Length: 336
Ligand code: TRP
Image (cartoon, helix red, strand yellow):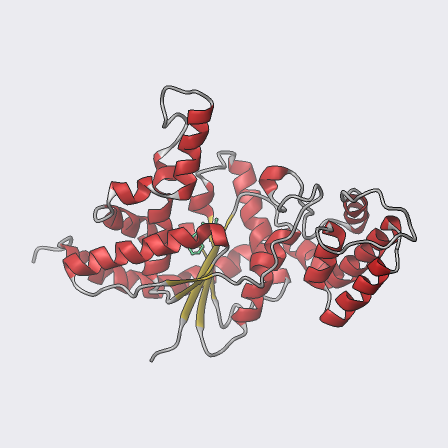
């Protein structure tokens, strides 16, 4: 069996937060050093257009996501690191795949169904109100991302698993019509990857406005941590680590011994103020090195750009010739 091809993307919709770090950035950085696989990591900037129609914010987010990955030590010699929009073969493949994708399959996508349900609840006569073709076709673009490089393993959060399954369906359909061109990908959903809770206790997410930016300056970081919602137990009263955001974030970053020690402090009744201060100090120390590097990269977008361009070139060395084969397979191309 040949080596696995691991591929994943991050949508460039905002400033990376601690939830993105533990859920996506940290595991991919670790995997980028694994020499037994070939990995592809990219900025899904076309995907971000679905939600983000503010050009300046899109550009800024692309820079921030790329700088975060690099600052945390992504191995760009091993992994192919690129920006989706630098690979014109991807939108081209999206169209070809759209031509073999059943509309009914897309009707079943969770994100689309949720948008329709929302219109329904709001009592709108048009169930598709405000829904763009890009939102509807989102899984096809994601399928093109995956199939372009014949990825075998696609690490994603639970919410994206359905999209990878759709990519399998679409690949199968294409292979059935045109012959075996695509490898069937598999989603890798790591149940151990922490889903962090945010300031208000709900899942940390840009859309809930409860996120702690990964590289917030020290002062801001401390201020945000002090805002984390807790219960009203007094110092000296034993505290439950379950459902505590302070503990949740600490555990996601600390070693298991440190986590066990913190658990003891909770049992011993550490005050919330002290627990937050400890969390702040730990995070601040853990992130200060990468944060310095991040700040340097943000101040030097030309460097980030050159890294992305080089990665894009490597990606196109694969995508270009493969696209030629795909075009020939479907009957598009030179006549003589
Ligand atoms: N849709 C994914 C998300 O929002 C990001 C993404 C785009 C992706 N293309 C991908 C992930 C291909 C894995 C593979 O999380």
